[in-house]
Length: 479
Image (cartoon, rainbow, N blue to C red):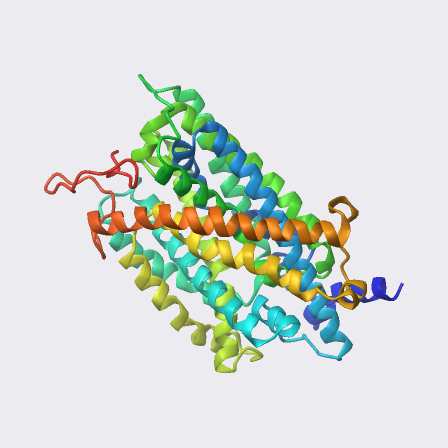
C-alpha cells in the first residue's frame, strides 16, 4: 500500500502548474489551448513527435529492404521502442519518488533524462546520457530544418534549398518562446492531424496512381541498402528521447507507459499503409528518390500535404529543441527564472549550431540513417536498457522498486532477459551493421555533393553531378 501511495504522489504534480487559476473567459481559453498535462495531451505529444518527416523516407527504406522486411522491421522496432520507453518511464518514477522522499520541490524545475541517470546511477552515467541525448536532439532538430527545405522546394523552386534553410531556420527559432512540453497542447493536436492527412494522402494517391510501367520490386539486393533502410526505421521509432520531459508535463506520469503503447499503435496505422502503398506503386524508382513527394504528380492535395508537413516540422523542431533549451538554461543558471522573455533570449544561441549544421549537411534521407545508427541506438535503446539493469541489480532495489515489471514479461527475470537482448541486438545490428552502412552512404553523399551544397538533389541544366550508386545514395530528384 505504501508503494502505491508513493506512485500516486509521483503523478500528482498538478499543483505545480495550477497557481493562479483562470477566472475569466480569455484566461480559460488560453489555458485550454496552452496548458496541457492530461493523458490525452501526452498521447498527442507522443504520436505527433514519433512520426514526422520519416513518413516521406520510409518508402525509400522499403525499396532498400523489400516489402516483407520493411513491414517486419517496423513492427519489431515499434515493439522495441515501446519497451525502452517503458524502461525510461519506470526509471523516471523511481527517481522522482526518491527525490520526493527527500522533500525536493519540482515546482519550477523540469526533470530531464540525464538527471534521472545522475540520481540513480551517478555522474558518469549522467555525462554519457547527456552527451548522447543532446547530440541526438541536436541532429534531430537539424533533420527537421533539412526536411523543411526539401519539402518546400516541391511547391516553390524559385529559391534553392539552402536559401529555404535560412528562412526556415529563422522561423523555427521562434520555438524559444514555448516554455516546456506542458505548453504544446494545441500544437501536438494539430501536428497529429497534419501527419495523419499526409500519411493517408501518400496511401490514397499512390493507389490511385497505380503501378508505373515496368515497375520492379527487387529489394533487398545489397547489404549496404538493407542496413541503411533498417537504421532509418530504427530512427523512426526512436522518438522517445524526450520521454522524461513529456512525462514531467503530465499530471499523472505513471500512466505514460500505456499512453506510449497506444501512440505507437496509431503511428503504425500511418507508417505501414503509406510506405507499402508508395513502394507498391513505384518500386525500385524509390532507390533514386529519398523523398516520396518527388514521385507523386503535383496536385492541390500534394501541395496541401507539403504545407502541412512544413508546419508539422516546425512543431517537431520544437519537440527536439525544447530539451536542449532546458539543458542550456540549467547550464547558465536561469532555468527557474520566471521571465519568459529572458529565457527565450537566453535560448537563442542553441538554434545557431542547428542552423549551421543543416546548411553543412543537407542530405535529406541518408542523414536519418546515420543519426539512427550512431545516436538513437545508444540514446533510446542501449543506455535505458543498461540503466534499468544496473539500477535494479540488487535484490533490495528490486524489492523496493516503485514500478514492478509486468507479469506478462516474466517479472524481473523476464525484464533482465529482454534488456540483454535489446542491448546485444542494437549494438550488433543497429550500431554495428547499421553504422557501417549508413556511414558508407553518408560519406558518399559528401564525396558526390560536397559540404554546403547549394541545392541537394536538385535538377540542374547547367551542371551534372557525378553518377550515383544505387547501393549507397539517391540520385538527384526530378519533378
